[in-house]
Each structure stands twice: as C-alpha cells, then as structure tokens.
Length: 188
Image (tube, rainbow, N blue to C red; front, top):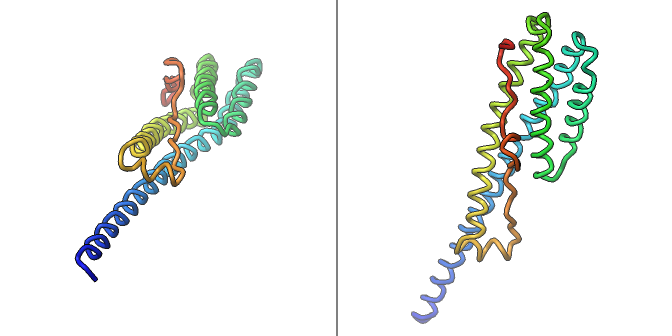
C-alpha cells in the first residue's frame, strides 16, 4: 500500500466519520423535537381531561350558560382532533380563551367559587397551563435547534439527501391569543 493510498483511506475515514457524526446530531435533534411535542401533547390531554369536570361543576350552578359550555366542549373535541400544528395552535388559543370565559361565568356564583371541587379544578388548570407554557418553550427551542442545523453548513449537506425537514414552531398569530387564561387558584 502506497502512502497516497493510505492518506486517501484516512481522509475517506475522516469524511465518513464526519458524515456519521452530523447525521447522528440531526437524528438527536429530530428526536428532541418529537419528545418536546410529546410533552405538549401530554399537557393538552391533561387539560382535555379536566374540561368535562369543570363543565359539569359549573353546569350544576349555571344551567343558563349552556352556550359557553357547548363552545368549550366543541373546541376541546376540535383541538384534540387537529393534526396540523398551526391549526392546533389556533384552536388551543381559542380553547384557553373559552376556559377563561367559563371561569368568569363561575365567578358570578359565590357558592360555586367556594366549592372545593371547583377550586381544585382551577388549581389543576393553572398547573396545566404553566406546564403547557414550559413545554411550548422547550418544543420551540428544540425546533429552533433542528431548523438551524438543517439550514446550516455542513449539516445541510447531510440533511437534504436524507430527507430531514424543518419542523413547525408552536405559535399563534394574535398577541391576545398568546395570553394564558386568567385563572387564579381559589377563584380570587
């Protein structure tokens, strides 16, 4: 084996090693985005599970507020079924506003505000909203890292041939939609 063949073999090994390293980083980043989305999904499911309990509790006190309760139920179903991220983000923002309206309705009923079950549901919803906010930030950070790598040299040389695609950020279009529902533990 000549020196030039040995040098070529070493250079090919280095290039191959770099390709593997870049590919593995892209896989790691893509899996990080998937895991972050899973965290959001878990929190959304927690919220979806709390909504029927909240509606049942408020309904016992406020039968005439059916329109708000029906709207919350409908949004819950549509948001759970949404597959496209921008659509899901908009439905989630609407759902958060409707839950806030439901809480405002409940504020008009002193007996309901004092109800232990209602107070616990409020605390649980605040907890879920806090976790959702954290999960969304984590997800968007993971998306930013993945998208930056996919668009940056030398990663783009590996990302394009292997079919890596940019991920979508979890964002909403209107600043008022970005606000979390105004829920206070204890109904205050």
